[in-house]
Amino acid sequence: MDESVDREIEAHPWRTGLFSAGAWRRRALFVVAAVATGYVALFFNLADRLSVTFRAFLLKGESLWGFQMDPSVGTGIAAGLAIGGMWLIMTLRDRFFPGTQGTGIPQVMAALDVDAEDPLRRHMISWRIAVGKALLLMIGIFAGATIGREGPSVHVGACLVYLIGCWRPFPSWAVKRGLILAGGSAGIAAAFNAPIAGTVFAIEEIGRSFDKKNVGLIMVAVALACTACWVYIGDYVFYGRLNPSLTSPVQWLVIIPIAAVAGFLGGCFSRAVVAGTRWVNRTLKNHRVLVPLGLGAGLAGLGLVSGGASYGSGYEQALAILQNETEMSFSYLWVKAAGNFISLVSGIPGGLFDPSFSVGAAMGQLTAPLFPGIDPRALCMIAMTAYFTGVVRSPITSVVILLEMTTARDMAMPLFLTSAIAYESSKLISKTSIYEGLSAIFLADLRRAEVAKAPD
Image (cartoon, rainbow, N blue to C red; front, top):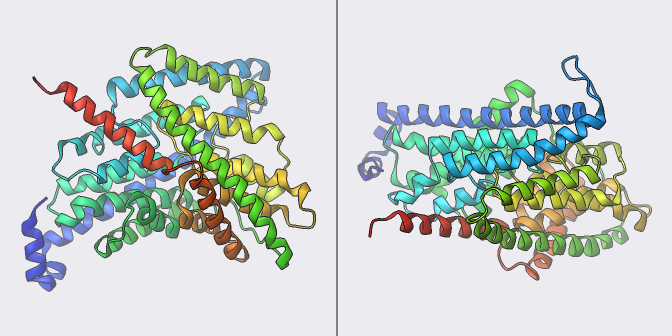
């Protein structure tokens, strides 16, 4: 961080902004990093799609590159992959990639909580962590862990954009927070093709404050990352275009019970994950083999009893519910939530957005028989918003991202009301958001590790 750059910009804004070779080199590096973040999110997206095909090959006997497998054999292989994959990821993480644990969003938040000069920041934001996060996420995706892609996209994006500050001097405000926020917002925006939600999430949850100086960096990074994805897969809508609505004032009343219950359940999940993470971290110190194998066995068991429905992010199930009104079993939402719980408390790289939306969609579908005459897709969107709000406690992001992922403009006001109720309901059971709780655990563990390594 070079404060002379700050003084030069303040003294000569035109010269440093338009006629400085150094400024244009900084901009060029920023563009490269933001575009690279988009490509990383695209790579994660394609890997997740391929993993769905891979599981269909194992569990349903579908063809993969001209090969087929007996589902009875594939089911055993899938269970073995879940157990062995969990052990492998946690072992590699602890031995070679410390700092890659968790969804990635709490780690980025922790990096913002320390000074740029603090040596701890390099244990949260580095090239090693970016590579390790991507590698371990790939293993987790194909091992069948119940994880999404958004958290690692945020973490890797923050690493890529922030680390360019090591190549050229940037203004101090950018090095302190701006570059990390820009990379994180670009990662989540590109993951879901949701540029507005990515920008809002960076301010509402990751940064937890509003600073006008950072807004320009965030918006440019988001635009570049999303454009990089559009070049290859087009301007797609994540869950496809939907047009459900609540057609009468009476129908709006369903928002209250669904939002209150789903938000409360989301808060319970959030609190359980934070408490479970503390327990796993303590227990792992003395049982570095048994804990990963036990967690992997839990994932495998859920996969066996659910016929493989618990494996993966849940995106394909949520899409089927919203687009085709495919009926999921009553057990689906519980095994998917349990799989996501096991995956999150283990600390393997992986997110919770996709699994949470999938659980919420299943909740909404189950309520449909209770409210005849109301579009089931509207009920699903209400439950998805409520449960996700309850888990992450980012009410504005919850509404904006689901609207961007469906283009269901008529649901805007119902979802805003849903999010407000779910937010208050979640607070009854969970005092802090899941990301704040996990960030505090991560930072405390990191500080203890640094103290333990310090010479007497």
